[in-house]
Every structure is written in structure tokens, then in C-alpha cells.
Image 1 (cartoon, helix red, strand yellow):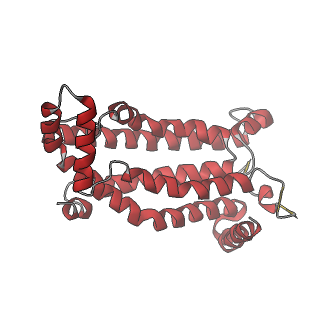
Image 2 (image 1 turned 90 degrees about the vertical axis):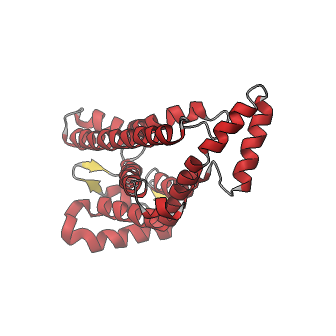
Length: 248
């Protein structure tokens, strides 16, 4: 833990000429970008998996008609088809799971006044007027929603809302493409996952809750990662992308 604290402090020192008192916040954004860059190959693989699952939809629709009266047999047949074609229905979850340790690390560091027996100097850093170790509730207590720290959060909430809206539209566009090309709706590739598929487009909006309740440093990680995901999905899932070509 202390090594991570020193790493962030070193990044902050390097960025101070550009960002001044907000250098530590910029260092966290840079750290998040590095994590996402490391995970990017898995995101590309997940995109190829999504394309491959879409390509299986006509065969799954045929299985659905064949085993319409036997849901258990249908589920086994669909899973066997995925195994035969080496397509994992849950491959898209792996990039998110691998990011969890980085988020938890930031959450821990910015929730404790001491790390490794040393005073946690990172808690003295700010994003403009908002301390990186504080939460939205602290900003409301200090000066209200329109106080100096509260305004920082209002800007962050606006960014999260814009990114979540973009993610929602991308998810709807992908679902419409699958329905138009295969006649199946999102989530039908594995029986029992349709309800999850309907909820998924709205999950980005729950980032608003996360940003409000975690330390600001962890919130910056979530916002940066969510924005990265939106841009990544727009690129990887666009028609004619490399991931689309490599999955055919």
C-alpha cells in the first residue's frame, strides 16, 4: 500500500507544473488510463466475443424453436453450442473484474489517514477545492451543493450523466443491430440472461451513486474508467472495426 502512495506522490510531483494543486487528481486519472491501457487487449477480445455471439444468433433461434417445450434441454444445447464454437457468453465481464483491484486500492488508500504505519499525505491533496479523501456528503456539510467543493461534484455528476447517456445509446444501438440482423433480442443467446441484458444499459447511471458515496479519488477512477469504456465501445463496436473483421 505504501508503495502505491509513493507512486501516486511521484506522479503528482511530475504533474505539478501542469496541474498545480490538482496534480494528485491528475495522477489518479493517469493511473486509471494506464490500467485501462493494460486491460485494452481483453476489451478487444470481449468485442470479438460479442460479434461472435451475434453471429450465433440464427443457430440459437433454430434451437429455440426445436426445444420450445423443453427449456432445460434448450439451455444445455445453447451452452454446448457456445463451447463448440469456443465463444464464452460471459467474456465481456473479464475486463471489469480485472479493474476491481485498482479501484479497491484507491478506495482503501483514500479512506485511511495512515498507510503502512506512515501518515497518508495523499489526503492533503485536492481537486480544485474538493479534498481527494472526502465524499459528497462532506462537501454538502462544508458548503452545501453550491459551495466550492459542492460545485466540483456537480461538474462530475454532469460528466457521469453525459457518459452514461452515451453508453446507453451505444447499448441500444448494439441491441437494435443484433435484432435487425438475426431476429433475436439482446440476452437471448443464453436462456435466463434476457433480464440482465435489459438492465445492463442502465448500469452506467448507477455510477452517479458510486461517485456520491466513495472518496473523491476513487470517484475519479470510476469516472475516468467509465469515460474510457464509452470511447472504447464506440470504436470497437463500430461497423467495419478491426474487432468486427477479426471475428468473421
